[in-house]
Each structure stands twice: as C-alpha cells, then as structure tokens.
Length: 270
Image (cartoon, rainbow, N blue to C red; front, side, top):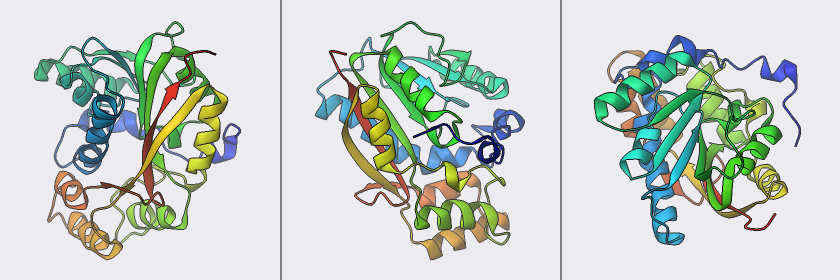
C-alpha cells in the first residue's frame, strides 16, 4: 500500500478540525456525534480486549492517542487508568482538549504532532491507538511504521477506520455527506478513495511487525432508512448532533462492510 496521491489527498478537508476545533464537547456540534455515536461501541471493545482477552491492567500503562482531536477518546482511556499522551496537528482542537481535561480533573499530556512524524523515542508506549484518523492520513505506510516504532515490544495497537465498500460509500459519503436532503457532515470530511480495506490494513500492520489479533465491525444500530429519517430531523433542528449519535449508536458486529475496529500486538522480537 502506497501513500495517497496528492490529487486525492487534496480533496479531503482536514482543516475542518481547525475551524470547528472548539466544538468537540458541544451537544449541538457535529464533532460531538463521534462521542455519542462511536465511543459507546469502540471504547468498551478496546478496554475489554486489554483487560479480559489480553489479561493486562491499565494501571501505570502509557498510551498514545494519535489524532486526539478534542480529547473525546483520550479522556475515556485516562479515566480507565492509562497515562495518556495525545497528539494532533490542530491547535484549536488541542486547546479544547486541554481545557476539558482540566475541567474533568484528568492528567493528560497534549502536544502538536502527526502520525507520520512522532517525536517520541523507540519503544515508548504500552498502547498506541488511532481512531477516526487512518482514513485521513496522507502517508499511511509511514504512519504505521511510526506507530510500530514507538510501541513497546508486546504492546498493543488499537484502531478503527472505515472500509472501502458500496455500503460505506452509500452511508458515509452519500447519505451523511453529499446528498443535500440528508447530509449532516461537512463536505469532503471523508474521501471514499482514502477508505481502507481490512486486508490492506492487515498487510500493513504485519509488514511493520504488528500481528493482528482481532477485528470487529462497527455497524449503525439502525437501518439506512432510519438513518435518513434521523438526518432529516437533524437538518430541521428537531434533534441535536449528540442525540443523533445516541440514536444511530454504532454497535459491535461481525459485519465489516461499513466501519471496523481491532487490535494488534507488536512482535517481542524484531
């Protein structure tokens, strides 16, 4: 798998996180949809995998959040006991993350950075996670190489991303982003060609010494017709973004056709 072509990468609007970076924790802001719609699915999966499947404890373990945004997932990991460092290229998002962590009484270190160029020594973290991010990265092979580099041998890599399928194009691109009568996400938030098939991500992880251990689907809790209805309600102002996320609420499934999440372990001997 190669880096995304410049003309394709230029179509995605990653500057959104600067213009809306102060709205991550606002009930009626689009980015809050990620907290109410996705976090209830992915974080319990990650924590159960760490505690139950891998028999590991979060106490005194270091975790790196790549593309932390406003801290909506960093705070979940910190509250569970991890010592979290979050990086993001958006200064506006980081400022929001820092302020909310202080408000929540959580000790989280935030700093400017990108997944392709991590400013940490080799073997620095027990856990690295990358959520809502891989489908936004220009040079995914470089990013995965950096993740593997800073992860300790035996450490865990958690992720979620969007599959490149007809279903994801219909829901994530057409319904949520392009069709004027349903779109509630900003235009060009996602670019379909940057979505990642599970087999592509598996190959990339393996080539960097990360052994995939599990993968699960992240599926909307309602059917496409109900999603359309909720989109219409949101456009009309009848429900907030937060409420929309709570009603769609993605769930763990065996269907990888929309979004998927999983984890891998770094080889102890490289």
